Amino acid sequence: MSRGNISHFVAGAFCFIIVANISVCYGALVDNLEKETLESSSLGALNDKKEKVLNSKQLGLHVDVTCNAINKCKNGGVCNKVCQCPKGTSGDFCEGVDWCENDRCGITNEVECLYNETSTQGYCKCKEPKNLYDDNTKTCQECDCGNDGECILVGNIKTCICKEGFAQYNFKCKPCDCGFGSLSCFFKRGGSKVCICKEKYALRTYGKIDSQCQLCDCGQYGKCHYDESEKVCECEENYIEYEGECRECFCGDKGSCNLDSQGEKICHCDYGSSPYRGICVPCHCDPWNVRGIGAKCIFVNDTRQCICPKGFWNKTTCEDINECLNKSACPPNTNCVNVPGTFQCECKTGYQISNPYEDVKHVGCKDIDECSINGTCIDPLTECVNAPGSYDCVCKKGYYSTAGNQGKSYIPMYNICYPATDQWLAATIALGTIMFFGICTSCCYIINKDKE
Image (tube, rainbow, N blue to C red):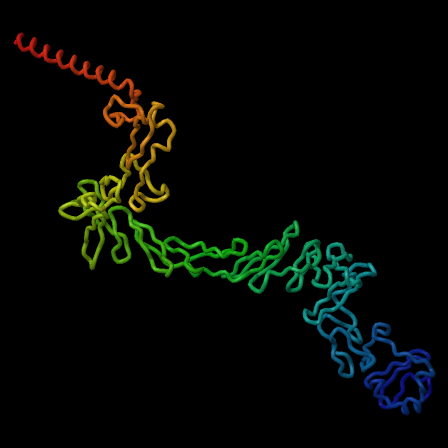
């Protein structure tokens, strides 16, 4: 069969000779032809004659082009002698993407149109890895968040999708860690870190260095937060904090409640109320309070009892106990003074408390040495003599007092002393004075008697 024939068979393949040195074969695949068959065919070696197989677009004919390890199918196509192309692709090797036609990604060389095998749709991508395609302008814009995040454009605004432990700040992914108890970590405009903690966790600050979401649980009846490093519980009404947990503490509307060191409830009831089965209820002792003495009303075995305050005893009312009837109630050199409900000890005249920082009841009183005070005795001819609880100003040796023997006076401070040589004169004057007042007194008595 000569070259000029319109058609010929080569190893079972039906071929047309379209133009000189160009042949197109249908049915059999070129790569199935044995090398020897091609070399022995009437066409001769294809390489030597530079024959070229035209595609279907050039010829307007359907042509099956083989795929193999060298000529692979693209865009997810499956090679089975020929490429079986997925939806949205075309071409001998599925290299065409229908979505990309009509300059869908613009005309710039920095953008390429690719095929997404998952969505079976085409998409535009910038060739430069640090750039991102802007669908509005069909151009590439710089969009780099560093090695710790992915950059996307949201409404032409650059946004970073950062890895775990990082957050966006100044369009870069920076380390942002709030601990395992956090829901999220982000930066405010000024660069300060913000932590959103999980339930039962709260932000705890370690000095001025860092903040972490730490366990902070006050139970179901309270909210927990940290005041710097100290845990604080904000409990609901009728609950108070005990050892980091909000516990119930309710005594009714007539008292307040707190917990002791063992966590036991203590009710502090208002006046006129007393604890009864854990609640403050009305409890009055009016017959015992007629004198204004506040008897305490309590419940013992479900029975009301009235207890007088200390210093009172229960008769028909709470009567005051006179502790001063006990002679030993106060120490020596003191006077006992009874007051309602108690008593006081006061130092006698001429005595002072032994220790001003203690109670007189405990330390007692000591004598005041008046002679140690300058000016106690006015007359320079006298000298001061101290005595328990008192003192006296006596005339010095060689002097005598008008008050009597031994120089003592009735008013010690104002004692007047005379020299011994004036003793008889003073005695005569004193005697004359006494006689004068005696005679006058007798005369006045007689005159008055006569008038009657």
